[in-house]
Image (cartoon, rainbow, N blue to C red; front, side, top):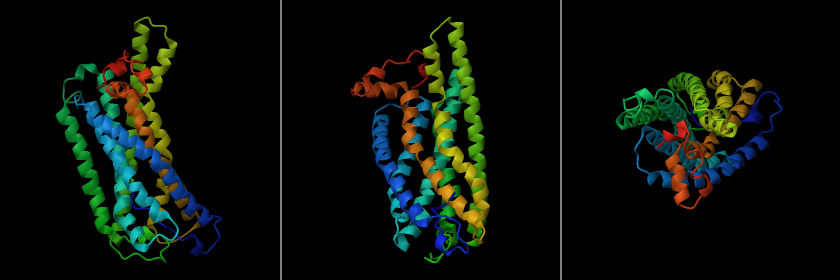
Length: 333
């Protein structure tokens, strides 16, 4: 998962039916349209969360998640500028070596943190007997695993990528960023993408399992209490599946496209298949980046203290008491 690759479509030996001008113009526009709301939302969420005390593991993971989202957001202008037609060679090289590395690995950190959030919800709703143990409610444990995630992703994965992207850039390159890599860098890139792809699918299965169990437990609790509030049941199901929904919408298509694209990307031969998958990868990567706008939904729907803070500020006051009595919500910070 390295930098923003650049392929000179016009240099292909055959016409693949890809309009390079349209692609080059659409991607910067899409990223710019994403940047404005993402900046507003993540700055606002960061400001609110900084005013909330970290009293639970859930809050630890939320604060780390918004940090990853904010880092992704701040890198977007550099990526937009590097994709503009006529962008300087130096800017594109800087994006390949540094900015895109931060972007990709912040996204991977977000994926891991969503897995931790799902496990946290699972233990507190489905297995409340472990709450108070290191699995359920240890702030030290949650801070340690969050810190380990950042350190591992940025040093074991990001730093080698930066070091091995060291060749002089060339405007004549078919794949600008990939050609900046050394031979070892290409092999490392291929292995890293494989590892991170496996990581994604493991987290996806984990999230699906956790929230299926959570939904079943909460609905069962409704039934055992004799409640006939069908609207409340539907609301609970929607809330407990919000993380899974964001995860599926944002990340799945990108990681599916990555499977066939990476071997072609690392190879030195150009083809229409490679060019088509490159375009698909670029647009599904933009879709993955939309998670920086959708993650605030997690803060609002799953964190009661976050909603209460909004209510105290006079924002969305009518939501301040909604669903505060459910099993899922009552375990939140």
